[in-house]
View 1 (cartoon, rainbow, N blue to C red):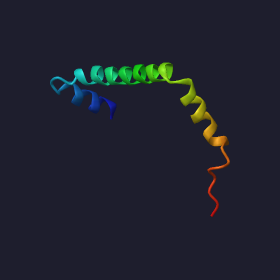
View 2: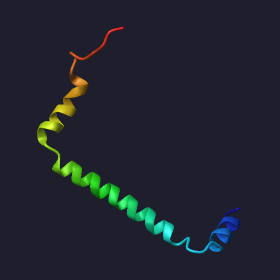
View 3: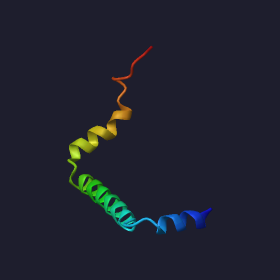
View 4: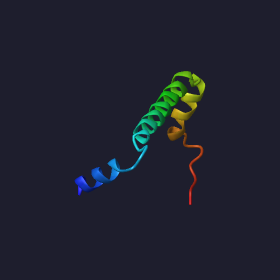
Length: 61
């Protein structure tokens, strides 16, 4: 089965660009995520971290 897929992929022109594009998207996403984490305001991080502990917003059914 793998030989069939490999031989089929070899016959497609220009397919070698897709792994490069995938790697660039993956790298850009995690660099952006890292940048967002580094530049996040401490007050925002503290507010978000206290949400699970906030009992005033609990809804009773």
